[in-house]
Image (cartoon, rainbow, N blue to C red; front, side, top):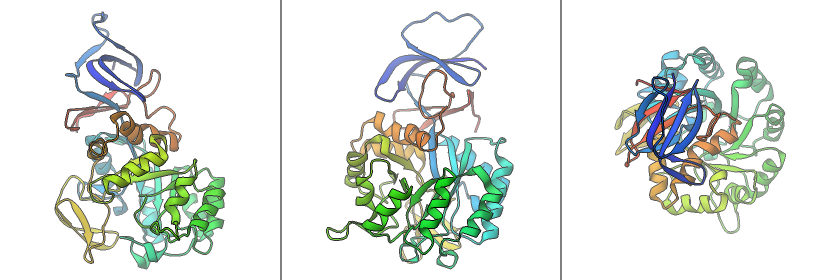
Length: 382
């Protein structure tokens, strides 16, 4: 299908082009221009954007579930439901993210992802993010302690036998016995190595970053806090130019001042918006089972029985809106939601609205509600 999107505000990396036209053919953006144009009769289907925002498809590197479905269910239906929910919220690519579990449950989750790839009904699967099980019980957050264990190289080799190159990101606690050995194994395979649910000291974090870790999962959450005599992971990450940070921007996990601090320290090229959503995303308040725990969502906030935060219910379009509301520019917020995660995952055809790249696009109204989502040049019917 060939389209021309007319009368849109196109959000580019450093500017916004008003009253723009975006030409799309064979799943790619062909060109961007503005003003009145002559359109060859019958060659393009015209779509009026109504003056709304057109942003590159957002990319969620950390999502567990949505619409009542958990990707750890091990079913194709669960993966597809998350794919649909992502697309409905302006996310066009995502990493299917695990939680700490038995080995068999993890392998079944991987198998279900493999069966769905290439047949997604919504957002495309860019790979798998393993969040655990090699995490520190002291900073477990909502991770189920009975499944946490020390890094095990033989176990990880078995995971790679099943998943292969689908493993794009692994979150570990590098201070655990075997952590640095595992880090070396993952680096050799080109995996994005992330730190979280970790009690690593500043010195241990610096060692991990020097050895190949390059990312911090849900920064500030699930890790040793900053102290003026014990700086911890976050300060170590601030000092390393190659290290990027995830942010759950939902008005719960991070204070707006902390979001601005992260942005000041890292810039939009070093900061990634995520949902870290559980299956309550899209459903709202109620009781759920997540990671083997009873989780209650009240007022949109998910907590365990002891009050511990248990992931989030935020969507990517909401995270984008909240980020702008903190005072960060729209262009920077879009970069953090789309461009930076694409760069981190080396998705070279995605992340910006540029001639020759994939037509993964989202039209948003003034309140950041999704009007439609396009994946590979096709507007999805969700």
